[in-house]
Image (tube, rainbow, N blue to C red; front, side, top):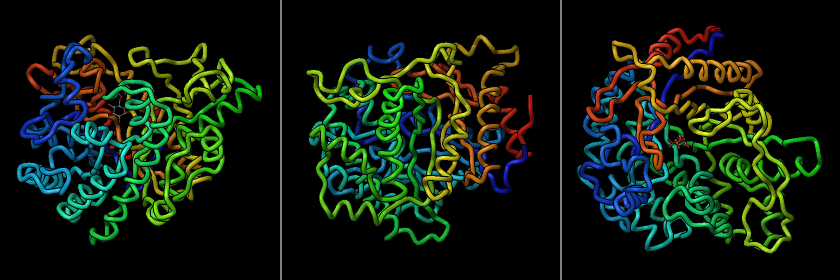
Length: 463
Ligand code: BG6
């Protein structure tokens, strides 16, 4: 399977999961959570050191290049770049770090794909304003974004506003896996709206500030195609609503600058629709993305909920659908995620047919496995054949989608070097490169060797 010329073979990571906290001025919500409750994190390991990218990046980049990684998606940390969050004044060390980093990336031949927000809300803004619940915070984000564009607009061609807005609402406002671990359905609706608004505000600044002709801006969405558990009309309806809530609530504003009418009606009838103004709705319309990043890990199988939405309970999206764990599914038991590569083909066709066939790429795809030392050989190489199979199966489906005319121009593996994974810390490893975390020794895995061949030949071969 020969991929199109110019297809980008990359890997993705994020600032909070790789850099380590060296010289950061502010804590983000994870830094704070770890400082106050370390026991909530796997083996009490926090983000202090992460994979030491702040110090190791020159060597790490060379290693990545040897694993075939020609582009790296990473994120700037708001808490590192900005000193005064209200005025957007710059932190000198943060400016120096990212400037040197992006220059080094060009020198080594690893193209920077730069994202502005990867779950890392400055904790002061969370405490003072309720984070993304506040529209003032969307203004502060716009200020931060404009600083990043001014500083690095000429060094970076591929920009992104957000990583996985859906996970922000799930983690912080619904299912309690990001600080402050709230359960507040109506707030989650406002947050979803505010994050889309913040993205449009950043895009507005990008269009004003960045004069680099090659530069584009996008957003990164985690898409979980919703498949009904059965042909029953109740399951079908549940899947339709899940699709609106999980995917279309973010896809449509990002690409078309509007919200799905069915979703607006549903939320309005439930009395939880977001607060918006005409001016904001226009802003959204005027500031859509140039390219889409799709993080794909697992599908979302859906069945009708157990109880009627009329039941006496606070509003939560779960009143419309319930996750269905399909018997006999292929599962990654370490993470509890179904492995279903065909969804990547379905995503490719959906983007082609419903989203103007916008240029897009797989901005994350990968497999987290625990205790990979089981698969080490005597040279220190992890034999992660399961990861190679995982990527091959997904890439085969992606290839079919491209053959069918979908405008996909890259694949980014999650992740380059084993990194810190939020509450799971270093439990599940995702890297093409192993990190011995106690010594920070980094060694290319078998999957990294395989990826290098793939990236240099641009051709996927069958097993
Ligand atoms: C994505 C995120 O949701 O999945 C990453 O963008 C994350 O930040 C990755 O690390 C894998 O999930 P987890 O929870 O196993 O780290």
